[in-house]
Amino acid sequence: MKARIKWVDGMMFVGESDSGHAVVMDGAPEAGGRNLGLRPMEMLLLGMGGCTAFDVVMILKRGREAVLDCVVELDAERAATDPKIFTRIHVHYIVTGNGLTAAKVERAVALSTEKYCSASIMLGAVAAITHDFEVINKVVATPDPTDETV
Image (cartoon, rainbow, N blue to C red; front, side):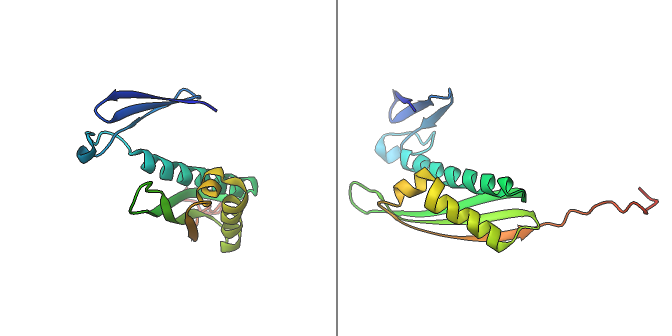
């Protein structure tokens, strides 16, 4: 995997990935930026959230679960002094589907956090990572074949 970061001006940079995608990173005005893009540490946290969300959805879909939505909310704290590493990260999963059980979602979250999510496992080496989840089941009505109003 390769990436390229190019300085634009001020404290703005464009990151380009191996897959051909780009993202703007910028600093806060007090650091010389113009607040026109994500901060690099925000991107790191988003990357972790995306990695674990990807895992959870994939695990549930492979188990033939009817997943309709997955939202991952992250709340992180950083050290007060340099290097201002993440010291604590809490991950809250909100998984919506049909017929999902807490046990199935808990298993998917555990597999992601303990085995598959490279980003959270790597960040877990320096930060205390906790998680919880909620399951929302939506009932999708199936048409009644005897209903003549259809």
